Image (cartoon, rainbow, N blue to C red; front, side, top):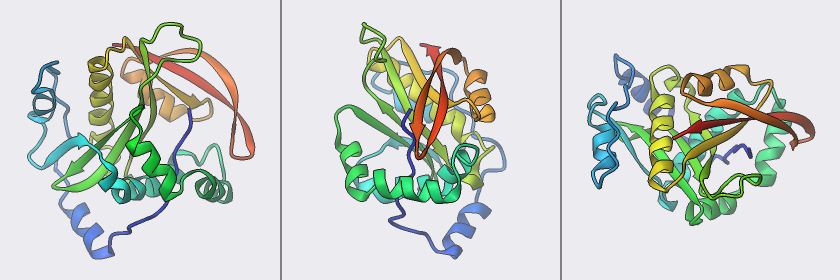
Length: 220
């Protein structure tokens, strides 16, 4: 799995950030239990969430919002894999404005953006295509799922993961898969709590380090 450290394109002021934190919901965002595969899917998905919680498809116009989420969350998510310098170098090499825009406009990519009263709280990206070892086009890769640090524990990750499963089903997939560094035990545990199971591992290069990635698969 290629992980994303997105370049900072727009930093909110401290006053704006404080206002968002103070305006957090008092209860965790609970994803809808009935995920209807109809034209009203997204409305059905979000209708049980607290007022103010939102979920929508991201567009190239959201490049700055997604970049800000990535900048805040990526270093924390990958501190067990790379150090600060390696994270910075990886960002400069792979995640320029042009690179991110290319992913957003690619027909093979699908970005979902979670918000709270219009403020972005997290995002996930799906890559429409089967696993290399899977001869049948029946699986979709979850490329990344990131939540702003201040919103971890408020149910945003669960909301995005359920939305990713729903989107994968709607694109005809029977499996959703993700590759996570083996050292990231907490991240692996998160996916396992939502039905993902380990199916092998492989060695990959992440930055300047060799890392073992575990492939986790959820049946849809």
